[in-house]
Amino acid sequence: MHDKTLAELATGLKTREFSSVELTHAYLNRIQRHQALNAYITVTEERALAQAQAADDRLAKGEGTALTGIPLAHKDIFCTLGIKTSCGSKMLDTFTAPYDATVVERLDQAGAVMLGKLNMDEFAMGSSNETSFYGPAHNPWNSECVPGGSSGGSAVAVAARLAAAATGTDTGGSIRQPAAFCGITGLKPTYGRVSRYGMIAYASSLDQGGPMTRSAEDAAVLMQVMAGFDPKDSTSVALPVPDYRASLDDSLAGLKIGLPKQFFSDQLDSRIAKVIQDAIADYQKLGATIHDVSLPSLNLAIPAYYVIASAECSSNLSRYDGVRFGYRCQNPADLTDLYTRSRGEAFGAEVKRRILMGTYALSAGYYDAYYLKAQQVRRLIRDDFKRALTEVDVLMGPVTPGTAFKIGAKTADPLQMYLEDIYTIAINLAGLPALSLPAGFVEGLPVGLQVIGDYFAEARLLNIGHGYQQLTDWHLQAPVQPTQEDL
Ligand code: GLN
Image 1 (cartoon, rainbow, N blue to C red):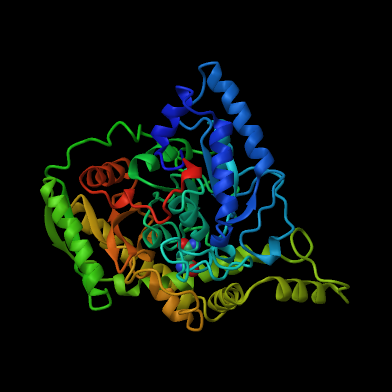
Image 2: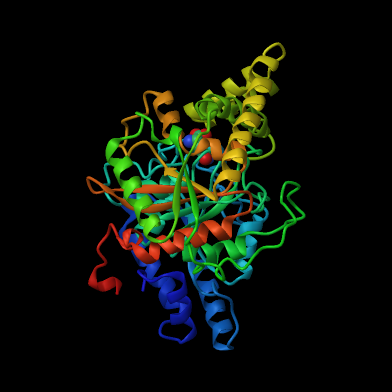
């Protein structure tokens, strides 16, 4: 059961081949057996079974949507009413959200079953899931390796079949990079396409939620519910949501693919470059044409991002003061002691580093030199993409410079960790949508192909992903062989 696509699961539920309660039990059993992967922070078994029962009742009446009765899980950055929402931090280890994020509410209303909350880097800061207060999640292809981050638990859950699909968020690569490391499909939508209401803020001008699934088709099913205007989010865009599944089978003949030369520099592992070249050759078989393009300001993306993201995080995280919610230190001597000890004891090292960098970049006298400069660079990067996307329909390249690395390999050197996002970060600065697709393996570890589209071109990206997944079977490879008891 757990090896079926969302569409197959929906059919199985509708035809009563299995019930949502049975399906939910199957996933809960798998979660139990694969606890060592550390994908989940919280498993909401009782609630899941109650939702499954309600879904079965709806289905028995012939009601329901494409997601009714299907077990999903959320990155623990999305607020869930009455359920712990930790954001991977000791700061929120005891925090129970008083409301649901819009994304959670919409999926709930569609009848999806929530299995639980997924592991992630603390406050979504990281590229390996190692900054989580709950310890790293493990890559199901090789448990000594990281799953990527920050949506590491989401990628592990989908790849290891511990949820039929999951939500994630992407500020600088956190959907696409773990999707690539775990061999699944991840879509970072255009900024403003998916509501950020109830999604704990890291860097508000960059954060965007999106689906993490086994295929582009599954991503279309999830996006259909997740996307759309939300009056509770002032940055959400009031554009109609297209039917994402309707265009999945459109022809790719004549598709103009741009290859940014900066994506194929010496920093890229040559074996990954080969995987990407093969994927591009597959697109040529589907009728696409290939063009060289240039994004001259791309090399400025990492420094600009780390100034902007740190500045925004220092402001967003100022709300964790030991007073309003989250962790509070024992016996504070006075107010200053309460603030400093609560924050000092509950934030991890990486979060503190970002807050310090951000506070510095925003302080009087440095603001123009750092923050303003970074915003100017951001504009140049956006202009580069806009120019390239007038010449071609989409851009393609790698998601990451290498495959999943060993746990602990990069924790001592933050800069090495930051360079993990060299191919993903610029897309967030520009606010564009991008898709990560499984495209092959290097030494048994998955490699992702990145497809970057124009603003609000998610339907086209999913169509391009689906076309490739009709021709190849990389997305069907599974790391954990299903055992008899799972079937
Ligand atoms: N790795 C990047 C960072 O640490 C991106 C994280 C993300 O997209 N949330 O900021």
